[in-house]
Length: 357
Ligand code: SF4
Image 1 (spheres, rainbow, N blue to C red):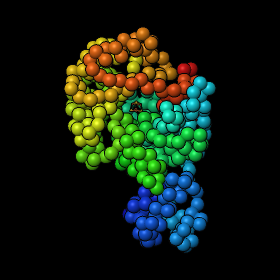
Image 2 (cartoon, rainbow, N blue to C red; image 1 turned 135 degrees about the horizontal axis):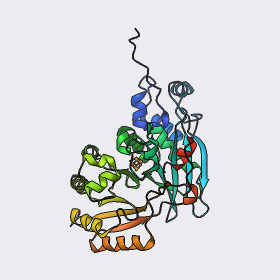
Image 3 (cartoon, rainbow, N blue to C red; image 1 turned 60 degrees about the horizontal axis):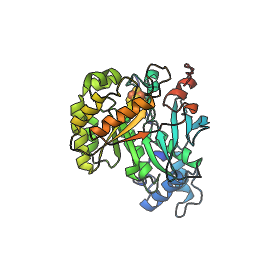
Image 4 (spheres, rainbow, N blue to C red; image 1 turned 30 degrees about the vertical axis):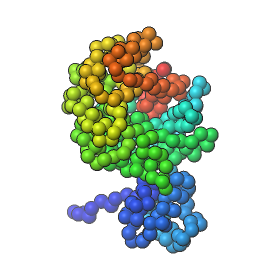
């Protein structure tokens, strides 16, 4: 019988901060200023070697490269929208797993990057193409960081100033790796993205919202609510059966007080499903007296089971939100010509049906 523990894969250097680099490779003996220069070269500058780093001896650089990994993700598809500056990437990891990333144009002008945190997703939300794929695996921290660095390297015309964890996967089901990636992305030697510009979107795993708050994480958390009624919410997001809306609302209020911030909510708007005044009234009741911002996102369901609300229907919902003192923003999810909803390109890449959008 072989009772040796399986060996862990070598650490990937783009999943590390200078502090963790020093801790992970004690035998190489980096001091903090060397570690900062190494991570700045590999993450901030997206370099692929350690040549010529001041104060870093060649033997030390070679020892580090021999003990670690530094590969990049492969881009297997890259679709530019003909109607706006959205670009959708399909990445492939070395084990063949495919996942998507979207470059989102912001005003100013700047870009934000919508990243995947998992290949596939286990949560099976009724309106989501990724949910229909099922779960494949969690992404490693470097695989999340690399999505941002690659998009940034191909977008010199505008700075990348934001990251949103709203691609494939439920970020809180890959909690540790998502937090590690966010820490690398905000680090001055890493992505240099402001922590208030890093947004993590969850469908609401209550124990992890509490953990996130207790750990004092500095990022922006959005609760994807999508219905204010337990029964309907559970029919759309099966995981919602575990935690009632009321308890999620209370957790988000606690977090907002702790962070001294607004309560961020997201709402995937579906015609005839969650666009009624009853939903707006219930939101008004749940969050009375609180500072709230609701992001309204049009559904993008290639099966046609869930349809986008018409301008008139959406307008009536937004009026009802205003009447119930729920401030909202409409999020444009971009380029239907590039299949911008998460899961569509990955599903095609796996040989699934290519739905017309
Ligand atoms: S909406 Fe998000 S959590 Fe739900 S199945 Fe899709 S990727 Fe998973």
